Structure formats: C-alpha cells, structure tokens
Image 1 (cartoon, rainbow over the protein chains, first blue to last red):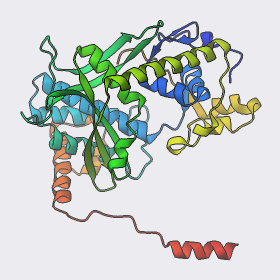
Image 2 (image 1 turned 30 degrees about the vertical axis):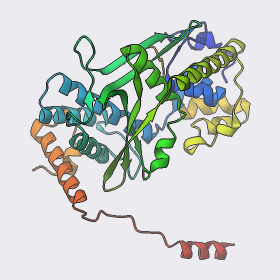
Image 3 (image 1 turned 120 degrees about the vertical axis):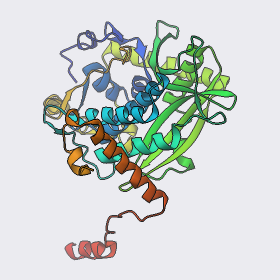
Image 4 (image 1 turned 135 degrees about the horizontal axis):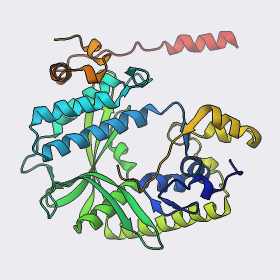
Length: 313
Length: 59
C-alpha cells in the first residue's frame, strides 16, 4: 500500500470523496467495501486495475451499453431496423482498439467480439418487441420513457447513493428495473439465486422506488449464456419486500461506516476468505507478495483506473 | 455479401450501413440454424483417461 500518500491525497480528484472519505456510493463500491477493505483500497482509494482487463467486464459492459442504446433509440422513435443497425455499430466501435487499429483483445473462446454482436442481435430480435401483455418500457409522469435514469439520492448520515438504471418496465401490474447479465455457463434456477440477497439488485429496487415515487417490485434479469456457437437467454425476477429493503438499507450504512472508519485510520485489512471468489480476486497476486515488493508489482502489472460513482455517465 | 470475418477485422468507422446490415443478417442466419437444431461445433473432448495415465508415468 502507498502509505506515503494519504487517502485524502489519493482521492483528491474524485467528486465522490471528501478528505479521503467516500460519501457517494454506488453498488460497485458498496460490494467492494463489503467484500474486502484491501480490495476496496486498491480499487477506490489507490485507483488501480489489472492491466489485462477482464473479458467479462469488457463483454458485459459493451453488451449492457448496447442494449441501453437500443431502447433509448426506440424510445426516441427510431425505426426498429435502424435502431438495430446503430446499436450494432456502437458495439463494434466500443470493441475496437483505436490506438492499435485492431479489435480489442477479448482473449476468450466464448466471449468473443463476433459472439458479442451475435448476442446483441439475438437478444433484440427475441425480446425487443413490446406487447400489451408483455414487458413495456415505463413512461415517467413527464411522458419521457424510463431509460438511462441516473440517480444521486440522499441516504442519511451525509451519504449519497448513486447509480444508473438502464430501463424501468411495466410487467403485469408492477414496475421492475431491467438488468442484463452474461455467463459462459448454462443458466439454471441456481443462476438467479445469486441475486438474493444481492447488493446491486437491492439498490436498484430501492432507487427505482425513490426516483419514480412508485412501488418498484424488483429487478427482471435477462441472463445470456454465451457459448461458442450460440447464445441462449433465460429471464428471472428478483423481488424485495419493504422489510427486506429496510434491512438492506441498515446493513449498507454499517458497511459504509466501516469503510469510512478505515479511510480515517488508513488501515485496510484483507478479508482472506474472499480471495477465491468469482475465479479469484484481481489483487490476489498483490496480496500474496511480501509487503515490501507490492508497490513495484502494482506498478508493473496494474494501471490507473478512476472509478468515481457520482460522476454521471 | 462481404466476407463476415473481413468486416469484423475492419475499422468500424470504415463500415457502411450495408456492411452493418450484412453482419446483422449473418447473425440472424445463425439464429435460424440454431433454432432449427442444426448442430453447432463442439470442441474435441479431451481423453481424460490418457491424461491420467500420462500423469502416472511422469510420477
């Protein structure tokens, strides 16, 4: 850890921090603080990420942004095929390395660039049609479609919860936030079990209710299994009761308080029971080295990456 | 129709709307094949038994 620089110095450029203490929190930073304070320190305070970017983040990020764009274009009245074309073009551009003048390196047998485009086209053709008895984009009181909703909400104790809802939909007699997930494995019922309890889904539900002043019931998750020769989709729903959201809200304040205290002390204990989660922590190779050589390892294998939750997309 | 692999290797800023439509059409063809149950390529399964024997020999 860079003890030479304090958290205040390291985060002076970040709007989500005051004197080294994070005050604006999104689901990503909350999950980091909940999982391991050392991982939180590397990501949010020091602001570094592995040089070799995870293909899952690359693939999933472009996929989500492409579908968000599609729904935004349709909400603006763009004709279906034109919207598909613009969406595919967007994904091709986002997956192109302009400096190298070549496609970005996906380095995976399933989550490849062509399979990304395939998944986008297949998803749109399967799910995009809005029908009276199916899922429809919700419209706000001002008539605008509920797409690309960024939020920054006071959550007490001088804390702000912020984030971004890609789309809110009506399904049956309820409102839901929509989210997309990709995986290389088969999607069974167990796939959707991971979303309860879950920080991101609880925050989306809570934020949806506050932003829309309406009872958003939960999140509809469209899972996409990315295989070598096909993509298969499964849809699941995770809901939250009022009591569950209250419990989540109180837990989050505890997690935030813990992280803020760590910032003030500049002490960042490792949670070594989390090192193996999700294929292995991206900082495992740092923490497994002796403290004296970690800084040089960070400099050679990691690159600067600023994650500032309150900055709108 | 342009070769799909060639289109994917081109700078997207150089792609015309027709090129993008070709890519979309190709993806839709693949979907039809998949929905009709046309077998997709599977990676060759590893001979685990042989691999196990190799390990024993090495030991």
